[in-house]
Length: 408
Image (tube, rainbow, N blue to C red):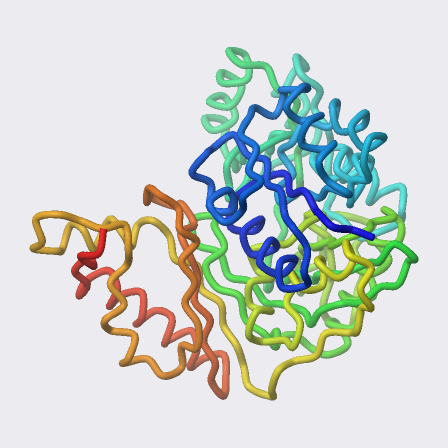
């Protein structure tokens, strides 16, 4: 019987997972270097140490029945040893593959799953020659680390290539080159997979990015049904091939222009490519907290605790939208407020003007910063077009009309 689950990482994903676990009667331990991490403030069992502190991590694992993680940038060297002490879900093997873009793409190729054309450029290699051979335009990405557009470089000119060559000469790093896909849609699909191999799959989410950061997620996705069925099928196949226990989020590129890759899968006029994996809850999956009868966090909690796993269903026939609330909104409210002191709380006085918005979640992060994910909202209406207009107006009102709350 599982009495305590450990979560590596104390951000918003860990916080929301902890809440689902607690509702099922489980104790939760959280490990994060930051004592002010949102999930650390919600548990009596918070461990604060570096990701390379073997002694502290051993103590953390020893006090748990099993462990999971909320983000990928955890070094796997220690985890391979630690998972022999207590079960880790998904395993260190899964994380080892998915946290490195080169290994991830190699897995896709070996598994026969659709992916863009790519080439790995080892650390210290001649980048200019590799790009010349690969062809431009292309996108260069660091193989490890980086998210929300960090560690990514669009190469479409000699000057941009030279700038990157200069950077990697000063700080050598392994890179991966990928073809530029003419995107028509970006979608994600989350699979839950139990310890006995039972798989469930959520509806397909349509994602919109701004400055490389997820901005809005819509469900149902505005994509042909046959394409959605193939996306769900591919996501399940990937989870099975990786032998995931827990959640696997699969991000897809959809295009109506034939890609360079020979591995693209065509469904009618659409080509499907897998962009990347996340073996954990996902930002786009926040929408499941209202759009589905079980959230992504509820499903992961059930997997970890061996609770029966039903197929998630849409909560209604309506359209739903999730929008990120970034630290920029807090900073704008402070700038536009006449108050002499500022709270870290958003002023939601205008919320009553938006009946479509059915939920607002503040993650409780101590310090708002530009581009930092501080919370999200979920809205519900008859169609996606209405929701996108509501989202734009709501965030505009937050930024321009708010003054900060006074309850510090």
